[in-house]
Image (cartoon, rainbow, N blue to C red; front, side, top):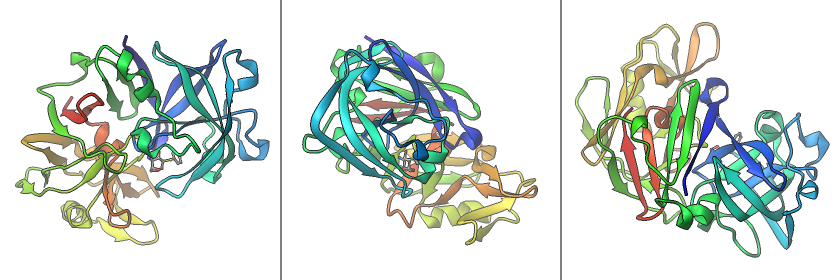
Length: 326
Ligand SMILES: N[C@H]1[C@H](O)[C@@H](Sc2ccccc2)[C@@H]2OC[C@H]1O2
């Protein structure tokens, strides 16, 4: 069993949305696949109207296979401070032809302002480890964990693109989606994330700085968040770049040519083209950088700025991450 689903970037590649079928007959909602969390939650008929902005809803009362999980609740707060909570159903969930007969589908009875404003997204589909799922009293598994044993291979792959359609593939590796060899490295899942140890970094064509630290691969984070020492070195190579406390990070003159950023995974070198580090224009002339400090978080995050330059294998069989250029 295997399948593939498209994933479409929103403005600035700030998030990527993929169609998911829930219930019988199937109701399609576009969800933000998030390797940094483990709850599948969705706007429903139970989400207050004043907390919505036209989002497509899943309505369990219209699904013959929906079952309320009596007494179950969920409540999640994300790294950026956004939050949501509610009650839980089980229903049939299909992604790209891969079907889980009884998946915990968390109905949002409360969503915070950034979710309320995000009209295109009906919720999140967690792809981190179920050890950080927030359902109580009985913690629930993710779609991938429920599907894994029936997949041809116990893995999914992520192929995000800059301002173009990419894909999530479940159960197989599509050799046409990457170049060269895939470099596998062990995952540290002790915090429920797809954690790994990059081996260093390089700015443009300068020398490689060997260094080992902890980072997570998080499709739900827009930027590449790294220790400030590395971030300072990158932006010191960009004329006119400065840390702007008001904007909350490094900005630079939009007409500046940006150097590439290369990260190491063991001997592998992942290359992020310079223009990927231009996240968004703040004014006509000032742009906001795609590489910013992770110091306030306490750990590094390889978010979409990095992931959209790579083909990444999330292997739940041997708990490894595979990296390749494309
Ligand atoms: N794993 C990430 C998660 O997907 C988002 S939740 C989110 C909030 C608003 C809009 C879209 C998504 C949040 O930022 C980083 C971390 O927490």
